[in-house]
Every structure is written in C-alpha cells, then in structure tokens.
Image (cartoon, rainbow, N blue to C red; front, side, top):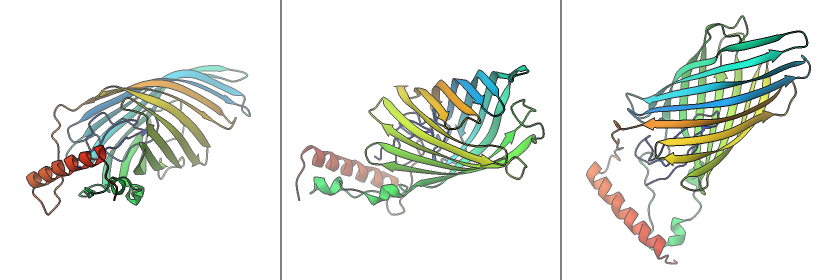
Length: 319
C-alpha cells in the first residue's frame, strides 16, 4: 500500500494515502498552509478546517497601521465522483486601521470563495510497483517515478458583499481558476504547487503561486515551509510561511503557523492556530480496476506481494 504524506498547506499537512482512492487513512488537511492538495477528501467525506489568526501590518509610504484578528473556515465535501470535491472558503476579519489623521474599525467577511476541485491525473493509478523477492537493495533504489506529479484543477468564484477590505469598484462576482501539482518524494517529503488566476476578467485580476514543502517527522508530527507570491496592477507581494501540525486522532489535527514578508509597503506579520476535523463514516472504498485482473484477484496478489516485501525487508538478501 502506497503511503503519502500530504500538506496544504495544502497544505495538508500529514496523512497516509493509498493507490486505490482519494480517501486517506488519516485526515488530509490543507492547513495550516495556503495551498490546496491535488487530491480530494473522498466521495461522501465531509471535512471542516478552521483557525484563528492575529495580524499586524505597517505601510511605510502611506503611513498606515493595521492590527487585529480573524477567523477562517474551509468546508470540503466529496460528491458524485471519487476525484471530485466541492468546497467553500470563508475568512472573517476584525481590525483597527490607523492613519495619522483617523482611526477606523473594520469588521466583515474578507473572503468568500466557492468552487470545485478535480484530480485529472494520478501517477499511481493502475500502477503496481514490482517487488524483487531476491534483492533488498533493488526494492529501495532511487525511483524516478516520484518526479511524476499528481495533477488537479480547480474552478471557483469570489463573492464580494461590499466588504470594507476590498476596492469600492470591485465586482460582486469574479472567477478563480487553479492548476495543482503534487509530488511524493522519498523520506516523507511532499511538494505541492498551486498556480492561480484570480478575479479573472476584471480590473482587479491577479496571478500567483503557492509552493509548499511538507515533511512528516513521525506518525504524529509534521512541518512545512511555504512561499506564496502574487501580482496584480494594484498589489504584489511574496510571503514566507512556516508551521507544524499534530495528529490527535485519525480524524482530528491541530496546527500552528507564522507568516511574514520582506517589504514595508506594507510589512506583514501573521500568526495563527487551527483545527481540522473529518467525518467519513459513510465512506466506502473505491477500487480501481487494472483491466487485467478481477478485484478479488488483484487484492489477493497485493496481499501476497506485501507479505513477500515484508519478509525481504526483515531479512535483506544481497544480490
């Protein structure tokens, strides 16, 4: 069975995946990063990811200061197809915006985005790695296949309810699209990349990326580093983010992160903690047919290969 640790971030951070389905043995959360993983939560699976954060900004040219806190919530649900996920992202912020001449308290939804994600390519689908029962070394050699990424696509829409955090002329509706790639590397590393086109077709369109590298340290702890960049006619920036996640139970994860940038127009500092929870009682495993074997035969063969592999790893035999 293929083990995959997921971020994101992404961002999620820590999970085990199988080559049979989108569903994982433990929760697959995108928190605490800003990237989305290429895989869905699984058909009939519901997942909630939420957190609280503090924010501090200072603009050296405009001489403005912003400080406050916020909540974010992501709801994810797999429906119709194993590879398909529907989601909604909400962000509420309450802050104090100060200039040399005034002070304003703002409190509203800063972001509302609804969308769907679909996995279009999985390099491990219908692929079984052959086990060499005579060589421990052959079974642990470097594998180029890990550089083949899983690929997903996302389409959604931003809803603007005349938020004080958006430009007065920003439309109430704008499209958003994303291409997502995900690689599982040896050593427990996962690389997730999001390439984003936001507010498409409006005067406020922007283009960006999120790159998240996650490392699983053990069955409970994982950490990540992330770089997020975006550019538009009104604002561009590059943000570095880092944090860790801890798996409390198979369906509950807690996390913490900190974010900052390298400019002073404005300088940004975020810090937050969060929780992810999954409900998967209605989930039924979905097996992928190989086209050559029946499901029962394939299951039996995999059990035999796993047993042989375990025996090889316990008592390595040199070629």
